[in-house]
Image (tube, rainbow, N blue to C red; front, side, top):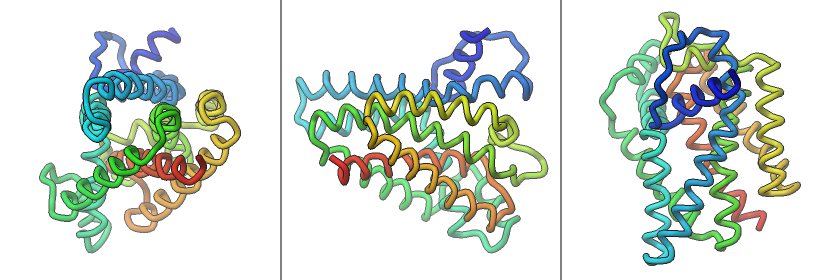
Length: 247
């Protein structure tokens, strides 16, 4: 059962397709969210392997670009797309309904394009600025805390769309038990990678998640799947920047 829940979590957060005939309801989904930090660790290990192999045959600047590309590909660009939609909605929407309508639109607007460019450019430059040893630790920690941030956001804030949507399962599945369990897993990982500085990073990510969630709640009376995606992307960037400041 634990393996099945883990594999379901892996399928939700990556492009890896797991054949599973099990009906996914709120109860079964709730059991998968605790593995989000662990899936983040697997993504982080993939990034470290990519960085080590590519840097052996490519200039460092190209190697770091490859790492960023792999991060986007392994997640299917889902979080980047959510970030762009959230930027479009909050920047261009006049009220709640208008913001939600823009977010739901599959087309990316000017604000979204500019947002993606600035996000990826800043993330790339920040990764490239890291020292080698610190870079590997950061690449492992970044996806862990990025995906962990789904837990406090889902616990604290309600879902904004009355008709439901992609992020509804996340928003309604995280209860206190899942939050505590997922947080213990995340803390175990970051204490191994970042030692005590990892606790500071987790606190910073928790604060950033609260700020994003409260802003969304003020604008649209809740959160959406796009807000989840945007939160993951922003928090990943925060981790890289914190690594530059702390090491």
